[in-house]
Length: 182
Image 1: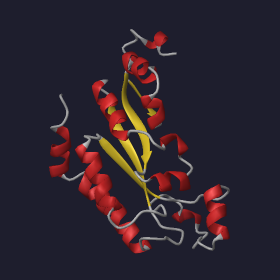
Image 2: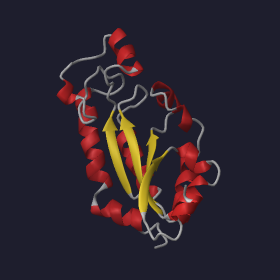
Image 3: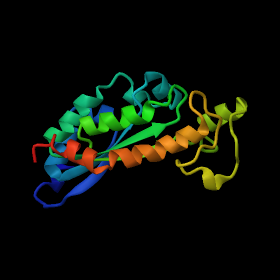
């Protein structure tokens, strides 16, 4: 696929798992063919949270090695992170932003855990009596629609917005950008 794209002078973006970045030479071939930006679902740093969200492809993966590989290949990173998993506490926002800035992630996308209908997560939470609303307009990854465990719904929503404000502050933009070679 990527061999045919060489020489076409095209630039493109894509999405990947941490596992795919670390395994084999696919990401290198994609970079050679013009990949310049990658959406990476880091999700969470907690192994227990990865299990809860069924993100087994990220278990025991070296996130920093993946970031370094992408930086070496000249690929910008849009890191995606989820807040509100059962093992999260009130420091998850600051820790996540700090990691992104320290690892020079280009952009970050944050989400509040959202148990969509017809998913195992929704079914499990419904059985536990944790679904708080069926107002589907709130199922947008910006609102808390379930009973949280270690952090209140109010603090979860406030932390979500604070993470954006902090990551995209001028001081953090400068701090992350000076970690890039160019």
